[in-house]
Image (cartoon, rainbow, N blue to C red; front, side, top):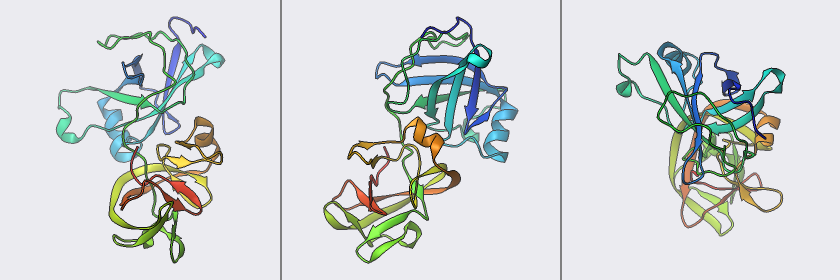
Length: 244
């Protein structure tokens, strides 16, 4: 579907519209990952990052484009990282932010956006991509162990969890920061990038529809490394212990 040459655009971070955001470009790299670049004033950036806690690694980014009520979402992705203070110059009045799309979440839609950046505009948003890290879960997610199902917070390095290969010990537990988690299955709060085995037996990450359908909250998140197994059981469902 061909959109107007200069559509109105809206950028949302964690479902909150950022009115000061100015889209620079929406384009596709050679590996088919859709890239969205937008700019916001420095004061807005710092407020979102430090006060409102909205700007974090893994924050959800959406882009809507169109005229009036005919706007449609043409990008759905995440922030792979944010700038630390040491990387911010006192002379930077405008901050450029880059977001990547999720795997298989977008329809191919052609869109032309105004841009004064060096990035090419007028590319097609991809239906495939290669996201970075961000798969993790909350400390109260229920994990299956040989002794029963318990919250992740009750586990420690050396404890055993159930995997398709039998009980396996935990080699490492890592804090991954503050992220939005979705209760995709009962008692399992995972980030949209956390791989799982769905009801059809397919390994995938969350869809747009699932992200919008299930309860969500912002919490401290974790991941872990398990000896000799790619997957583990969380309240009866298979989850990938490593980041995407």
